[in-house]
Length: 417
Ligand code: LLP
Image 1 (cartoon, helix red, strand yellow):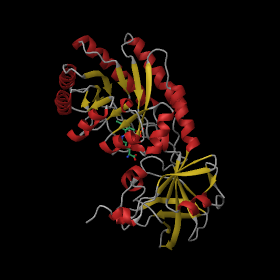
Image 2 (tube, rainbow, N blue to C red):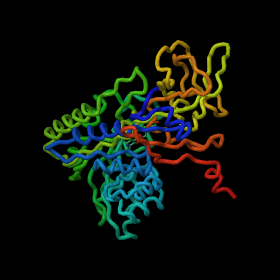
Image 3 (cartoon, rainbow, N blue to C red):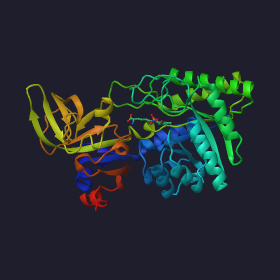
Image 4 (tube, rainbow, N blue to C red):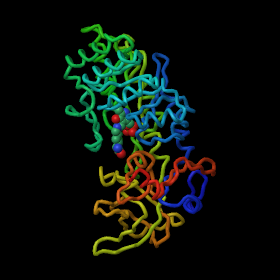
C-alpha cells in the first residue's frame, strides 16, 4: 500500500473520503527552505513572495509565514484569507490587472504593504484613495518586457498584447504613470515588476527578463531621473507533472537568478537594492496529490475508461490547458499493462483527466492517485454539476490534519433563497 507523507492512502481515503486533496508538508518544507536558503545575496536585499493564487487557505498562509516569506494576493478574497490567518498585512503585495475600488480601499485600510500597480487608471484611482484615506503604501509598477517563455498560450502573461502591465515599448506611459505615483504624498514608488509566464523550464527566459529589466532601470535613471530600486521578477518556475518534465531544481534556479542579477547589477552600477520573486506552483504543485475512488469501468471500441468520483470540477487544468498528469493505483503500483483513459463524472465530454496512461487492471473501489495536483487544483475548482468541493488534508510524518473541510450539499445551497 502506498503512502503520502507517511500516511497510508487507503486510510486517508477511509477517514476523509474521496475525492481528497492531500499535501505532503515535508515536500513543501524542503521547497520553502530551498527558496529561503538559496535566494539570498550579499549585494542586495532579496525576498520570496508566495503567489497564493496557486493554493490559498489559512493553513497555507501560516506555513508561508513560518518561513518568513512574503505573500502575493490578487483579490480581496485572498487578502481576507491572509488577514484571517494572522498574516502581517505589511508583508503583502497586492496584484491584479483590475483591482476594484472596494478591494483597493480594503487593502489600504488593512495596511497592505505594497500595491503592484498594473496600469495608469489604477495609479489614478490609488492616488484618489490615498488622498481620501490619508493612508500610505509602497508601489511597484507592473511592466511587460515582451518575453515569451515557452508555455501554454493561456498562461503566457508577457506577450506584447497581454492584458497585464504596461509594455516596455510604451515608455511614455510608464514614465507618466510613475510620475503620478511619485507625486503623491503617502505613495512610495519602489520599482518594477514583471511575470513572463508559468511552468517555465528554460533558465535563459529568466536571464533575458533580468537583462531587460535592469537595463530599463538604468535607462529610467539616466533619462528621467526615475529611481527603480526594487525589481520583482514574478514566478513561473516549472514543476514535474509527468516523466517528460525536467524542471530546474529550486536551489539551482534560485542561485542562477541571483547570479544573473548580481552580474547585471554590477553592469548597472549597483542600482538595484532589492530583488523579489513570486513562485506559486513550484511551492505547492508537487506536494499535492488527489485521491479518487474508481467507479465504473467502460470499454468503447477504442478506449478503456476508468471513471473517477471527481474530475474537471476539482481539476480544470487538463480541459483548459491540455495539461498532462501522471497517476498510480494504490496497492497496484506494479504491472501497468492496460491503456486507460481516466475520465471524471461531470456531464461534459471534455471531462478527461488523463487521455492515455498505462495502468494495471482496475476495478470499482480502487483508489487512483493523480500526482502533482497541489497548484491551481483546489484554487480553480468549481461547483459544476453541483459537486461539493473536496476536503484538503496536510500530512506530516504520518499524521494528517484537515485544513479545508469537505463541502456538503447544505453549504452549496446556503446562500440560496
Ligand atoms: N506572479 C504573477 C504576477 C502571476 O501572474 C503568477 C501566475 C505568479 C506570480 C505565479 O506563477 P507560478 O509560479 O505559479 O507559475 N492557472 C494556470 C496558471 C496561471 C498563472 C497565472 N499567474 C495553471 O493552472 O497552470
